[in-house]
Structures are given as structure tokens and as C-alpha cells.
Length: 239
Image 1 (cartoon, rainbow, N blue to C red):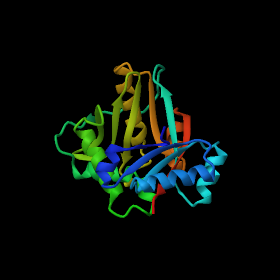
Image 2 (image 1 turned 120 degrees about the vertical axis):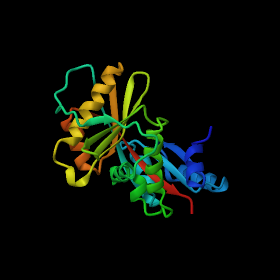
Image 3 (image 1 turned 45 degrees about the horizontal axis):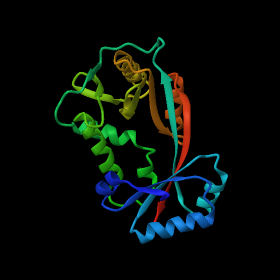
Image 4 (image 1 turned 60 degrees about the vertical axis):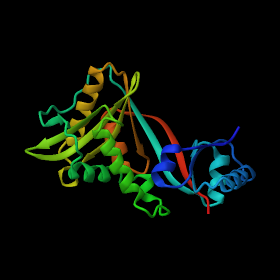
């Protein structure tokens, strides 16, 4: 059984072969064998997912200077209880066919700590293209079931995208215009999101951010979310 899987979507979107690797107790020998096999099959990049407590694998990756692209934190919250979020009538469903430039700009703002932005080996606007694709496909309801915007007048000041599984809801993208932060717009969007999920019989909601994004972590914790898991994601580029 291979230690890696071809990521079809990422490979097609970025234009070069990308693999996903679940790294568990990888010493240097096993890691070098993995790199050799990836190289033989013309892969350019592998996302390596590692438990932070897996000292062997983390040390091996650091020894060969693999880039730690993210410490991904998954937060979760149960939506069966009552919540006390600010109430507003400024939040509406985004029902337009086309994605506005404002939404695209906000989507890019939401990815400030994205591993696709901070990795210096991305050279072809991968981050901007990815987040533009993400919001466009969310508006088309291909990656989201709902897109909510916070509006004042005709201006969008914030947004949130929501996707539903069988029992779990996922907050995908969330952003507030930089000069409008500190006005509880984010909490109002979270409140509207949790109400949407509750109305749709979703019992648990998850959201992913990066450990380095201290402001986002504090924000979710202030909204009642708890840490579910943390995983280190390394970008292994095949030179």
C-alpha cells in the first residue's frame, strides 16, 4: 500500500502533480524512500499531514528542511444549546449569480494566514486563484449550501460561507472588511451561521484556522468554539 495519494483536484487546478501523505512515525530512511518514489512518479509537491505529538516524523521533516506550512486547528461547537449573539437585520443571503469583486477581495483577505499564501515556493498566484475559485464555487452553491453577507446600504462589509454534511456543518470562509473590524460584525455572522445550521437540524459545526492566526483563534474561542484537533501540514517540494 502506498504512503501517498494523488490529489486529482489540486493537480488539475495548479497544473502539476500533488500528493497527500498521512505521515506516521516516519524516520529519515522512510522519508527519503517516499521522496524518491514521488520523484520517480513526477510529483512536484506533497502535503504531509502529521500529528504534532509524532516527534519522530516532525523531527525527520525538519531535518531535511521541509516547510511547515500550517498548524491547522479545527474548532467545533454544539448547536443544540441556546446562543447569545448580537442580533441584526443587516445579514442576508447572497443570491446573485455572479461573484462581486468585493466578495472576491474579502475572500482573499480571509486567507491572510493560508498555507498557500505563506509558502514562498508558490510563484503563480496560486493563493489568489484558489481563494477566488473557492468563493466563486461557494456562490454557485457547489462548495457551500449558503453564503451570508453583512450589508450596510449597498455595501458588503463581511461574509461567511456554510456547508452541510449529514450531521456536521462547516464554516468555510469568513471575513470582515479590515476597516470595519471591532464592530461585532464577525460575531453577528457567526450567530446567523449557527442559527442557519440549527434550523437545518445540524448538531455540530466546525471551522478550520491556523494556530498562527491568534486573532482568529481568540475569536472562535470567544464565540464558544473548542479545539477539536490540531495537525501539522508540511509542504514537501520535489526538487
